[in-house]
Image (cartoon, rainbow, N blue to C red; front, side, top):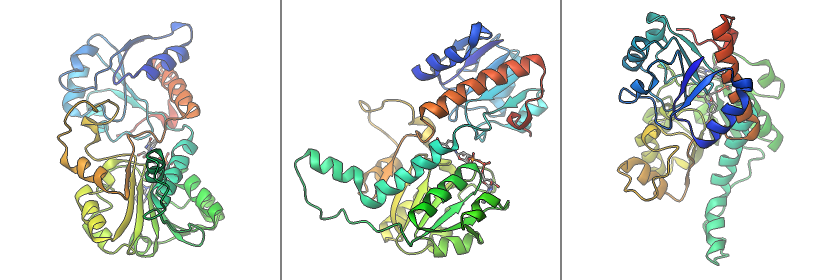
Length: 331
Ligand code: NAD
């Protein structure tokens, strides 16, 4: 099937081409992000493959449908960048990668937590400069501390299991109880109690209308003083201005984010030779107790291999009229 692959980085091109055994699909690799300006590049393609910062909103989908696209498959589990209702109205099918190494993201969240708590990036930069001082590098033991997990699905449950291994007490907030989470000693509480009791809060729920700004001025005001917030889920879960205010007041002792609400115009590109005009991210990276990474939590050999194979499988199964099961995104 002729497929336009948007936001195709070098690794997407190499690994997707490798997964496309015997050239089953004709892949047109495009480095551009999908947007109203670039949708025309997919003219004549029955399918498009997108990534997390592509714009698959109603207007873009309408243009794609008018050009003959019938299938949109995202190389991610999250699908908040696709207007599923508009797709259904236009008769388009939407698919995702429902399942790929959840360990990749959970392990990275733990890495971010350790890095921000124990100031590992700062320490490494210091020793490169020949500074072996310890002042300013003190963290706290995770053993015996309370870790709140918002969203105890696949990734959240693995994160919780790792934290239980550290000897942390684990609290969870989720409308669906996960037996795996409870089996490791996790205790479900209301979100307000989780914020009030947790030394660390880690976000693992999807971005939906209900979860947008789940971390805001109000939830931060009720958070335990000096807690650390980790977000490897989606930028829109956190009101960044409110997080900056909480960092200034000391309510937040640290912030570690792999995702950022305005990341679409920044992430997955080298902007080191340009003037970054986003003052909020510039303010964030100026804090000594903030770590920002560019949406790389998923980036392991295992996860990427699975994402590419599932993307090709989605294309093949859609073409064959097969049932995509939990990989189908329903409106
Ligand atoms: P999942 O569907 O297995 O789990 C999500 C959980 O969140 C579910 O249990 C769901 O009930 C819960 N949830 C939904 N709304 C909630 C709410 N209002 N409050 C509390 N819990 C709520 O998904 P997953 O595979 O664990 O992935 C979680 C998220 O991680 C994805 O939606 C995606 O945004 C993010 N993610 C990020 C990266 C990255 O590279 N940074 C990679 C993959 C996934």
